[in-house]
Length: 143
Image (cartoon, rainbow, N blue to C red; front, top):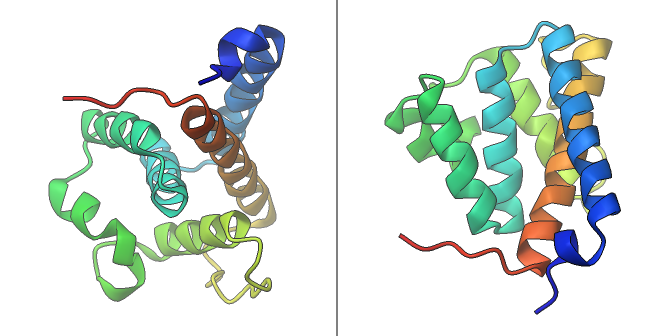
């Protein structure tokens, strides 16, 4: 097992800096930080990253997220729990994560402007990178 953060710490630090930039872009775009956590959770679900799922679920709960919404985020489009803006962000995050799926753009219901689309896209790009670092490095996930 190779821990990527320990093998190449400068690359890891660069990812931390990019993460900060993506979080700041979400904030500057006027998006709720909780929406950012939902995007991080959904991307981590799609990638199967247990470490990031646990971390961002805890972060979402600390920011006031409900267990009901967390329970159905994997099927967000089928529930009435998420706002139009949250649905647009989750659809965009899925499109960024599933590169093999042709781009659709039907996820955008007009609830995200260009700055918000860019911010959510960057957040999903960074989260995909974190998922790969955590999975490849075999970050432990234990009770």
